[in-house]
Amino acid sequence: MTETLNNSAVILARRPEGLPTPEDFSVVTQPLTPRAEGKIRCETLFLSLDPYIRSVIAGNHLGHGIDPGKVVPGEVVARVIESDDTDWPVDTLVRCQGGWQQFSDHPSEALARVPTELSRPSLTLSVLGMPGLTAWAGMVDLAKVGPGDVVVIPAAVGGVGAMAAQLARRAGATTIAITSGPEKRRIALETLGYDHCIDRIDDDLGTALERAAPDGVSVYFDLVGDPTLTTVAQRLAIGGRVVLCGLIKDYNGDHKTTGPHPGLWITKRATVSGLVVYDYESQRQAFEAEFVPLMEAGELTANEEIHNGLEAAPEAFCRLMRGHNNGKVVISLAD
Ligand SMILES: NC(=O)c1ccc[n+]([C@@H]2O[C@H](COP(=O)([O-])OP(=O)(O)OC[C@H]3O[C@@H](n4cnc5c(N)ncnc54)[C@H](OP(=O)(O)O)[C@@H]3O)[C@@H](O)[C@H]2O)c1
Image (cartoon, rainbow, N blue to C red):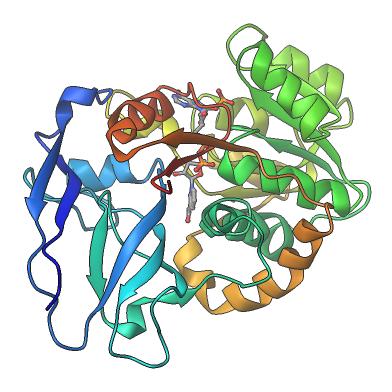
């Protein structure tokens, strides 16, 4: 007979207004319901916190969302603890949409294997996971970054930005970080190897860009929206490529990006692409095959900010949405 387990979970207590606060969430403990036939029971080891969850809890992420009372969704690395499926035996490490909770049940088709060569499984949520794949899609597939490019990356040391910078550098480009505060500046320049760093709060962005990119910006990876988008677009080189990927400035609901006038794209002969990482899921295996060995060989840097315990998730998420995180935010539930 299966032992009765309690499940700790973080539920949405109410929809946040503006910046989220920890009071918008509640940590609850409930007995686990019996596992349905065919489902595989997983125990969360690492939970990814991502900015898009802000629109999920507002009820409007690409047409989807959750209501108060529901477990907050999120991608996790988990260990199989109960299974009748011989392809997914107990102790297999998996990646799945487990949510902000200790235990979750899934059909086998909702599970993905964590690469066995990976010495730190949390990396499959960060630099080698969805944020890393987003960076690859933006830098390599859409912008086709190469030698001589001058690449500007805001949110420069976060999950997407950290990998984007490394891909651009490996391709021979000059990299310019936009970030905030002395600690993130240090991470950008010393840990991630950006060539230049601009402080989005203390520096005048336009003036700093004139200095760092006197011949213009050839690639801009927009992770934040206005006013950064418009200021960088005004300094685009002829033939510049702009990848539109995120609107963190808008997610808290107190700002609306409108973007540069289309005339600017025309005069700069710019290529502007929209990126949704879900379109790249079929390329995930090839991405892992290329970058897991590089990570294990010490050729990539993972800039993770790890917090311990599920109860740390609400506060860590609120810090992320204020821009106070210093790297990809991951919650460790592993003992
Ligand atoms: N389109 C897609 O498929 C896709 C996939 C993944 C991620 N994204 C987007 O990519 C962006 C980066 O995601 P991430 O996971 O790598 O996040 P992250 O960089 O780890 O965290 C967000 C960062 O945004 C920066 N930021 C800039 N302006 C801000 C503001 N007004 N308020 C709060 N933060 C601000 C902050 O960094 P600084 O202090 O360094 O400026 C903050 O740390 C997000 O917009 C996300 O939604 C899109």
